[in-house]
Length: 334
Ligand SMILES: NC(=O)C1=CN([C@@H]2O[C@H](COP(=O)(O)OP(=O)(O)OC[C@H]3O[C@@H](n4cnc5c(N)ncnc54)[C@H](O)[C@@H]3O)[C@@H](O)[C@H]2O)C=CC1
Ligand SMILES: O=C(OP(=O)(O)O)[C@H](O)COP(=O)(O)O
Image 1 (cartoon, rainbow, N blue to C red):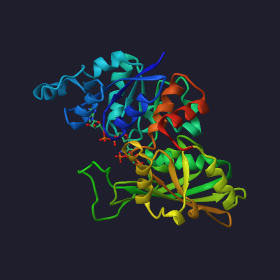
Image 2: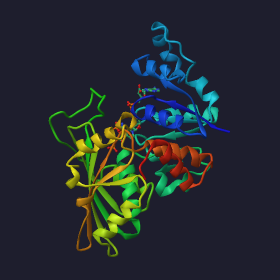
Image 3: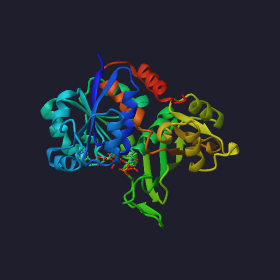
Image 4: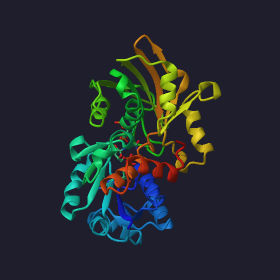
């Protein structure tokens, strides 16, 4: 039997998760919600995806455009086993009551606070914690990226200090900035360090900046080690870590632009780079400190996590079975 999945909020993350669900042989995409009949709604329809109005309040917009919807969110909730809430940050918490009332499981995203769910989630780090849970939060793209690499070396970590250089807006976003400034998050730590701790118990502090780019985030990671590691050890560990790839500057990977071009060259849907990109030459050990620099494709790294969270919540597969299945279905390189 396939798990019936609905998506509430068919935006940047929602449309990618919807696509990923259609690639799974143990899941069925029942429908997605939209607040208005824009080009994304028409495209979903062309793809044969049933489109539901996100609430009764939005129905007049669809009626005015003669766009026939399959129903409203309430109808969708009655047809599914699980809803993936990919609405804008903070909205998921408000939607939770609707999901509880109908008794459907729900996955929330990183824009929600940790207490919206029973556990926060990064598949390779804590898949087991989501087994049979009703409410799970897939952490933010930055937190997912940090967790993937730090989880791989966690037994060596005394203390982590990481600087997050975040993209100002997604490529399709015309409302956010800055477009000519660097904006620090003056709260220290930024939410990323505490968020990593909702998944793995390590000592970590983060600071964060927003810069005028749309394509990726970059992290500068510094780790105080509690036991010795060599550069070669770290390279070996990351080479053997799923959803982490090493890229070499000497092969032309000078910046995030070439990383995205790499994803385009792979003919990845929406140039998704699901894997965290670590610059190989940036891995360095100085005394008891490890340094490395990584980049995160914010629009896609959390997508496989949502798929694995569904399998954990219905206990459909064990951790590695699910990760391998998801990786294969999305063409994730390792
Ligand atoms: N864009 C990113 O880089 C990442 C975002 N996230 C998180 O994923 C969540 C979604 O973010 P995005 O996809 O970027 O947002 P988005 O703005 O691209 O998409 C949200 C969608 O929800 C729709 N929506 C608005 N109000 C709604 C309502 N009342 N009911 C149903 N749908 C409604 C919007 O029209 C839009 O289509 C947030 O929690 C965010 O923090 C996580 C990782 C990366
Ligand atoms: O939630 C995200 O996108 P958003 O800034 O569009 O809400 C990304 O995951 C990045 O957010 P973060 O930098 O707070 O981790």
